[in-house]
Amino acid sequence: MSHASPQRLSASLIIARIFFVLLCLALAGLMVFHQQIPDVLGLGLVVDNLAPWAGLGIPALFLIALVLRGRSSFIGLLVPVVVWAVLFGSSFIPHTQRAPETALEVATQNVHESAGVQAARELADSGAQVITLQEIGEGQEDQISAELAQSHPYKYMVSTVGVWSAYPLKNAQPLDLGLGWNRALRVDVSTDHGDVRLYAVHAASARPTGHDERDAMLASLANYVQSDDSAKIVAAGDFNATSTDRHFAPVAQALDEAQYSDWGLAMTWPRSPFPVLGIDHVMLRGVESANLQRAEIGDSDHYALQATIDLGS
Image (cartoon, rainbow, N blue to C red; front, top):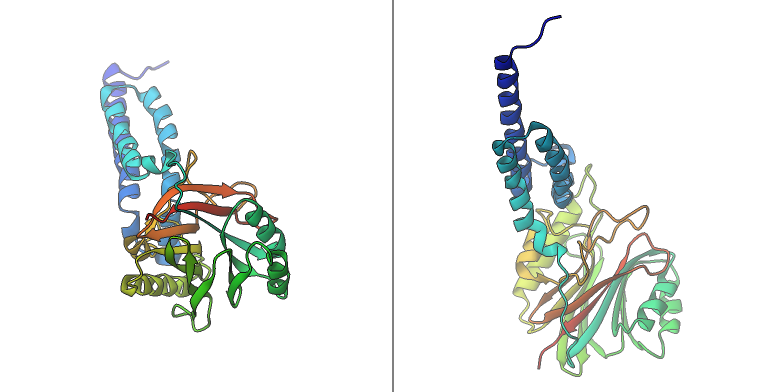
C-alpha cells in the first residue's frame, strides 16, 4: 500500500488554505460590493436583499478553518467577520430610549386584504396614534373607519393605502410616485407638538423577473422628500425593498430609518415559516426614533411595525 509523502500532504494543505483564504475574501467582497453585481436575471435584486444573510457563511467557514488549522486560515476568516460586523452588526443590537413626553406612536402594516379591521383594532389597542395600512381589501375602508370611529376619527385613504389618526389630518394629497395610479399619499398630522408630514407608501412588487415599477416609485419618493421643506417627516409602509437594496438607497439618503428595539433585524416578511426580509419601514427626518417594535398582528403575511417617535419641542 502506497502512502502520500509528507511533502505532498504539506503542499495540498497549503493549497487548501490558500483556497480557503480566497473564499473568505470572496464572501467579504460579496457583502461589501453586492450593489455592484449586475442585475442580470434578477441576480442583483436577490443578492442585495439577502446581503445580511451572507453572514451565515461565516460559521461554515469557521468549521472549515478548524479542519485546516493554521494561522492563515483564522486570519482569513477574520476578514468576513469584521466586514459583516461593520456593515450589519450595529443593526442587530437593540436601540431603544425612554419614551419622551413629546412622543408620537405611528404603526404600519400591509394587511394583505383580509386582515384590515382586526389589524386596525389591535394596533389602536397597542397605543398607536397614527395607523397606516396598505393593501386594504375592497369594502374594508368603512369597516375600519367604524372600528376606529372613537379613537381615530380622522382618516384619509387613496386606493388601497389608508391613514387613520387620533389627530386631525390636513393638506392630504394622493401620490402615484410614477406608477401611473395612486398607491401612496402624504398628509399633515396636526399633533400637540406641531405638524408632522406623513408619507404612507405601498411600493410596487419586486421580483427577479421585474422590479422597474418599484424602482421608479422609490426614486420618486426620494425626490418628493428631498424637495419637501417640512420640518418633521415620517414615511411608513411597505416599500418592497430591504435597507440593503440598491434602489432603496435614495430613500435611505433622504431619510433615517427608525432603529429596531430588539435583537436582530426587523424582518417583516413573510411571517410563515419565518421572516426573511425587512421590506416594511418607518423612515424619519427632523424627528428621532425612541423605539421600534415588530408585532404579529392579524393574519397578514407581514408583521406590523410600531414606532415611538420623539417629536422634540
